[in-house]
Image (tube, rainbow over all chains, first blue to last red; front, side, top):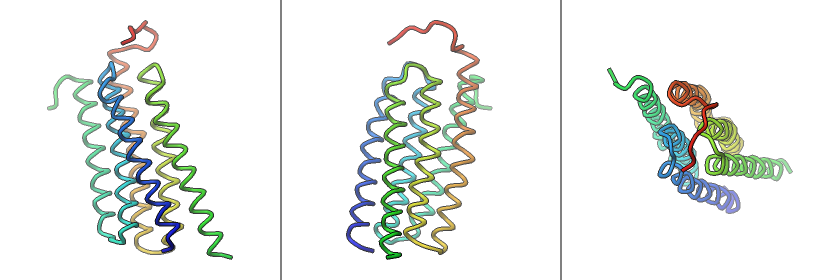
Length: 91
Length: 104
């Protein structure tokens, strides 16, 4: 892997990290609960992409399984919070 | 020549992915309503994710790792619109969008 590709992947990972911190503002200051849930969902998607980028960058392929599990966890968290918002209980 | 073309394609895909993530985050911060924020973020999620993962697939070539990337991509494409739909349904029952909302 050439040096330029490595720098490109590192730049994209750092950029996504900065964007995650920017969208953390909406999770902090969102007036409704839906704003916070949407912000957390976006952050979890970005972190999935960051994990795959790091897996390619460090050439350790089992990190990709971590990314799969992280995507599933973000989906389950979003679904459970939305169900709690809709019904008021979780059973 | 082929190598140069491949690197150029990877650069283009990564740049497009960064652009769409930037636009989605901008919409999440700047748009006035919860539903319009949801509209911005789901588009950035599906398209930015797809472009970044296709860039990685072009980078790695035809291998098992690329198949895992495709699995991640299919899972995200299934779950992100579903999650946005469920959040929108739960919010719509409480806060109708035509009601006047107070700004914070």
